[in-house]
Length: 185
Image 1 (cartoon, rainbow, N blue to C red):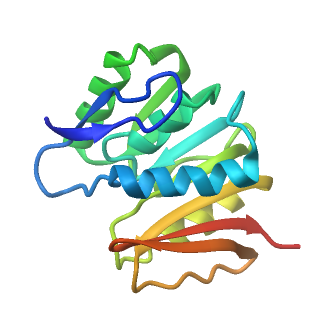
Image 2: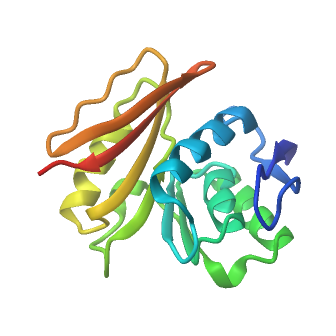
Image 3: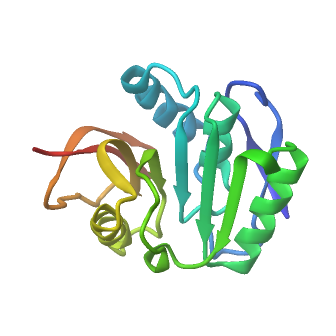
């Protein structure tokens, strides 16, 4: 496991996280995560009790950041075996097993949801359009409800247009573009 990621705030502030080996994943930098969570806090107020999904999870840093800030539960989904190992390692190191569900599969192979998530965090490979495809499918399967907040990280050069969703706000940080989306009427 390569390192150098840290939890930005909350119960586990400053704790180190392992990133998956190799180049298959691109963990969200601490500064980008800090900006994203500042954007989310100004909209959500608090993470207390939230049900969160960290999709294309990589190291699990986004979901673990939400758990550190008080989210009740997080579903982590990634199809890369080294990413799954890193996620499980990080969850164990933080003793967050009881609040975590890890699925080694494609985001697009998730079945129907029992109930919508409060927050969906997506950090798909850049320049693939995978985030937009996933959001559309997850909405149809009930993972995304009327009250769900969605964070989508893309390359700075990418724009996002998904039928039935509006961009609440967008911010560029380094090479990343952070989009906060909601269902539109």
